[in-house]
Every structure is written in C-alpha cells, then in structure tokens.
Image (cartoon, rainbow over all chains, first blue to last red; front, top):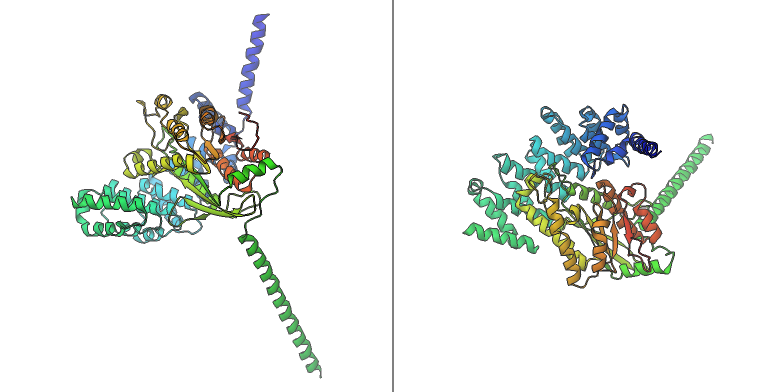
Length: 248
Length: 313
C-alpha cells in the first residue's frame, strides 16, 4: 500500500516537474539563466534548442517587454544566424543592448564589415547615447579606428557618457595597442564641461608611459596648466598633485 | 460688366482666403501657446486619497530641494568579463530625460552640463508649492571589461565616488536607491569583486566580512539621518538586508526584493519607484506600480514608508 502510494506520489511529482518545464515559454526558460544552478540553466538551454519557432519568437520579442530576455537567449545560445536581424534591429534599439549581443557573436573576420556599420551609425543623430557607448566600447576590441575628425565630432556629443567612451577608446589605443598618435584629444577633454571627464583625463595623464610623456612635455604641461585652477576641487587637487609629481 | 463682377467675386474669395488663413494661424498659435504653457507648468499635486498618504508626502517633500541618489553598483557578470552598470545607468538616464507620457512621471529631467551624474526636475509638492528634485545617477565601473577595470587607476576613483555618494546619501539624502549585486549579503558593492581561487566571486569572504553592509549599519548608527526611503534593488535583498536595516533605523521606508532579480526588472522597478515618488502615489498604487507588468518580476516590495502602515514583511 505504502509502496504504491510512494510510486504514485513520486510519479506525480516528476510528471508535474517535467510538465512545468515543458509548458514554459521561451522567456520563462530565459529567466532561468540568471541566479539558478548550472543544472537548471543547462536544462533551459536544452529546451530552448528544441524549440523550432525560437528564432521567429525572438525576432518578434526585440523591442518589446521581453527585449532583454530575447537578447540573452540569442547570446547564450550563440545564435549567429540572427546576426542580420540583430544588425537591422540595432539601428533603432535605444537601449544599445543589441550591440552587446552582436559584439559577443561577431567573428573576427566580420570585424571590418560590422565596424563600418558601427562607424556609420556613430555618425547618425538617430543613434541613442546607450547605443553609441556600446559601439565605442566594442571598437577597442574590434580594432576600429575612429579617425581624428570623427573623434573630434564625438567629443562634442551632448552625452557625457559618449564623450567618456571616446576617451576610454583613446586610452586603449594609446596604452594597450601602442598606437603612435598625438595627445591633442587630452587638450579637448581637459576642457570638457563635465568634471568627471576632466578627472578621467587626468587619470589618463597619470598613466602615460615615460616614452610618450617625454615626447609630449609641452602638450602635457599645457593640459595641466588648464586644470590647476579648476572650479571643481577634486579636479584641481588631482591636477596639482600631477604637476607636483612632474616637477620631481 | 461680366469682368467687373468676376473681379469682385475674386476679391471676395481672396479676402475670405486671407481671413481663413489668419484665423488658422491665430487658432494654431493659441493652441501652441496653450500647449507650451501646459508643458512649462508642472502638473498640480494629486488629490490624496487619505490624510496618512498626504502626511507621508508632506514629510518626504518637507524641503524645497529634494535629494535622491540612485547608485548603480559594480555589475560584473563573473565568470564573464562583462560589466554592465554604465549601460544600465545610461538607459535609466535616457528614460528620465524622455518626454512624459500619461502614466510615467519619471520623465523630462534636465541634465546638468557640469556634473554628468546630476539630473533635476521641477514640480509642485503636496502643498502646491514648487520643489526641485536633484537626482544623481552614479555608476561604479569605468568600462565594460572587468579585467581592464582592475588595472585602471580611474576605477579606484569611481569606486570611492560611488561608495561615498551611497554612504553620504544614507544620512543626507531624502531617498537612496541601490541597483547592484547583493554579494550574498556582503553588498552593496561598488568595486570589482574579490575573487576566489576559482576566479569566481569569493562569496564566502563577502558573507563573512560584509564589506558593503557593515558601513551601512555604522553610518545609520553613527549620525542623524534624514533619509526616508532606501531602495535595495539587488538579489534577495529582503532576506539579506531588510530586518537588519530596520533594526538600526526603524522609521526608514524600504524597497526590497524577496527573490533573485533580473537586471531589466530591477531597472524598470527603479524607474517606477522614482515615478511613484514624483506622482505622490499612495500605498496601494505605489505597491502596484512596483509590481506592474514590466517590473513585476523584480518582486519589489515597499514597506515602512507610508504613515501608519502595517509592516508586512
């Protein structure tokens, strides 16, 4: 009696669990990517892979309330076949998250082609600041070069976050990719209206290796001269400590 | 004769056309002016459904200048290198600076040119007098790559700045919202995480040392605080923090989440909480706005904020 009760209970429980898993929508599985254990995550991925309509559903979900979940699924499942859809949708994606997924899926051989699309979109007034940030941040890894004109234009962007991303890209090119280039970007960013950009500029000055510093003494001195009486105490204080450090 | 009549008819037609055109311009101008005026004037305060609700907002909007801090914690995605808080903050700012819609009050904020974190919004308080809300939206990371952030000296400044804004907010702001990781109860956290031997987040260390939570208790215990609402949009924040914060500051309103929280839901719910404060929503409406369709999965709950409210958690 007890044995048959246990059998019914266990079978019922496992059937219920299986059906709860089987009846779920794609977005229910997508939610299980976050914070759940590896087994649940793997089961969710396996279930999603079996869904024959998944790509259609995901395409429909872009820009809706399930936008981020759809992008998570595309990224986690590595759905490279959706790249054309993503690239098309990203042009009107104000959140910029489509670009993060594109960046995670892109093959290095496509860097130039996608890079050109990014450069065109960085020039467009219709592109949101979040999207510009995502593209600029990816540019370092994709080895996209903005060029002096576009750099100057983007350093005048209304969004301080875009200007900050341009400065970060400049830092990567200078310190990580050893690009031989002038430091005149720093002359612009030290005069940025947002104090956070001026601080970021000074931290970059503090990181400059000796070989770059020696070749740009006059420019660096000019940059520091501009901030030694900065109205923002934090900028002024960091600026003066750099001046004192340079004098030693 | 025929020609003369034709000329008179033509002239009359012309006069009619000019009059109609002028009328159109006048009406259009008047509508435009009315719209512009309507747009420029902040909406009147709501009719409160009960006195307790009105008292809550009279207390919250006691001063002409309201200080709200929204601090985005360091949002790494270990074992991946991606760090997301800058992007989440950017979406938050885009939403706050967008045009107002019928149901959204967290809108038409104006960005400061000199402080990238500062947004302001003018509106009428519960007494009908003007208020200005100063909202600071502060990120913790300097870039999207955790490995790179760890060796960038600017990261240390960002971490200190975000941490200080959060802790100062606990005593001097009217509302503070944290949107980030719980670090298993050791959060909030504004810096690249401490890693274990497996290069994953060292959760046992966070649990044992509570590097983010200990300063919260010390700050709230150590100085008088005017903070009225603390939102903790992090995983299972109800379990990790709610009772322990309440013990130190029993009169504090709290927004916490009882479960694991998906970043987009936390973001949506953070925006909803700012919108509800601006709309001066009473308890029921405030609660349902935090659990409405797009924010519902955050499971965020408000407690202890409304006067005479029975604490449910």
